[in-house]
Amino acid sequence: MGVYGFGILGEVGSAVGPGGSGEMRTKTVMVASAVVMMVLGLGTTFAPQELLGAWGVAPLPVTVLVVQVAGALYFGFAIMNWMAKDVLIGGIYSRPLALGNFAHFFVMAGALVKALIAGHHEAPVWAGAVVYVVFAWLFGQVVFGDPLGTKGLGARD
Image: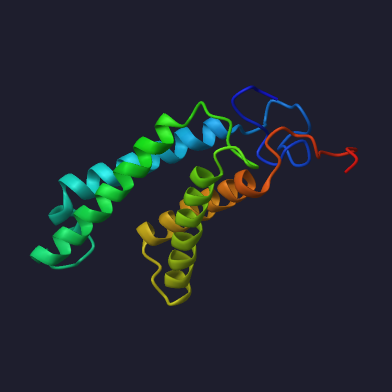
């Protein structure tokens, strides 16, 4: 296990087994989520009219403002995750940061899956749902997992 991260599922559920090269580390999750949110944040902050037009929504002043506010939130989350990428996260370590990310991705994953169930099968909805479900699962593992891998297979409680 690294100083700055842990296997997303601790020792229990690494992709290729305990200590394997497939272990995800929180740094990877934080960087990936920062990049995704930075792209969303910059796009919605600096091109709200274009995005609304692509989505078939009239770029009224109020809708442009709402999209830009969402962009500011994405941008803030991106900066926060980027700055915290080298911090041990999980368990009690940086719990508010991990829980905030989990809540964001979990709630949005639910909203996007609900949209899919309601018949909105557009490519951006599918792509968003996949990305958000994956990040919700990853941050769920961070929040509810074992950052130091002390409760892995064979460990005694």
